[in-house]
Image 1 (cartoon, helix red, strand yellow):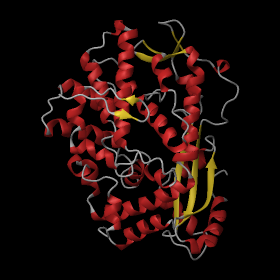
Image 2 (spheres, rainbow, N blue to C red; image 1 turned 60 degrees about the horizontal axis):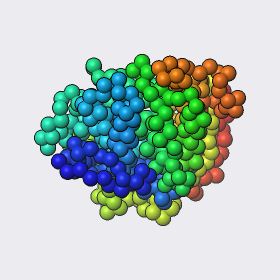
Image 3 (cartoon, rainbow, N blue to C red; image 1 turned 120 degrees about the vertical axis):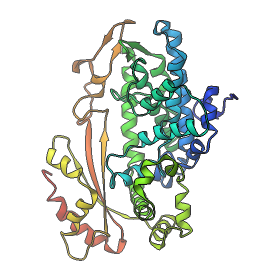
Image 4 (cartoon, helix red, strand yellow; image 1 turned 120 degrees about the horizontal axis):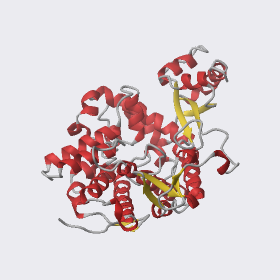
Length: 422
C-alpha cells in the first residue's frame, strides 16, 4: 500500500496511514472534493471554497496525532492497532454522507424526512466502499468505525474512542478541531484554533476523555469561537438568503428524483454533489430551478425582512420556532392581502454555547489535576463573565420578490406580535 504526506494549509504535511489510501482513492471518497464544507457561505466569504475532502483528511490526521499522544503518555491503555485503525478510519469517513452543499442538503431533506442523518449515510457508504472494492477491512474495525461515525460506542472497544471522533458529552473532538480551525482560517483569516493544546493536555481517566485543569481558558475560547463563527459566518443573513434559494432549487430537484431512494441507497446518493447547480444552470431541472440559480449569479437575492430571537426559557416561542417552516410562512402571509407562501421564506436557527441549553459547557467537561484524578467544575470555579443564555432560537424572515418587500414587512410586523411570549 502506498503512503505519502500531502501538504495541508492548516497542519503542513499530513500523516495519513497507508491503510487509508485504498479508501481515499475511490470515486465515492473523491466525490467530497466537490462538496463545499460551508454550503452557501462561499457566496459571501469567497475564501471559504474548501471542501469536505480536505476536512476529512485533516480529521484523520488529528485522530492519528491524538492516538499517538495516548500511546506515548499512557502506555497502560494498551491501545491495540485495531482500536487506532477504527478511530482513524471513522475520522476519515465521517462526512462521506454529506450531500450537495453540506448542511443545506440536510435542511432540505429534513423538511421531507426529519429523521434522516448524514452520519448514517456515511456509515453506509463506508461499508459500500469496503465491499465494492474488496478492501477487506477487518469486520470489527469496520463495525467500530461505523459506530464512531454515528457517535456511538462499540462493543468491547474502550468507550473513550468514540469521543475522539464524535464527542456527544462535551463537543470536543477532531471534527470540531478541524472545521473550526479551517473555517476560521478561510473565512476570517484569523489563523486557526489552538487545537493542539487540547490534544496534548488530554488524558483518559475511567475510560473517558479528560482535560488538564489549566486548559479551562483554552476550552472557553473554543466555545466562544464556535459561537462567534455561527453569528458571523455560518448564519450570516446573506448566507441564509442564498441557502434558502438553494433549498428552493432542491425542492425542484426532489420532484425529479426519488427522495426515498436518494436518502436510503448509497449507490444513488454518491451520484450527486455540488455540481448539481451546474446542471441546474444548464436547464436540466427546468426553468424554475434555473431562474433561481440565475438570480444567485446576478446577486438578485431574497431580501431580509426581520428576525425574532427567542430566549430558551420561552418554551412557547421555542416550540413555535420548531414548527415546519411552511407552517410559519402560512401564518405570516395570512396577516395581509396580496401575499402567498411563494413570497415568504422562513429559516429557523439555533445558536448554542456548548451542548446544553441551561448549563455552562465547562460544567459538562471532565478535567484532571493529578494524573489519575478526574474532577468536574462547580459554578464558583467558572469566570463570572458568562453568556446570558447558553442557547437561543432565532427565526429569520425573507421575501422572495423584492417588489413585495413593503407588503412583506407589514405582514412580518403583524405576525411578530402573535409569536408566543415575545
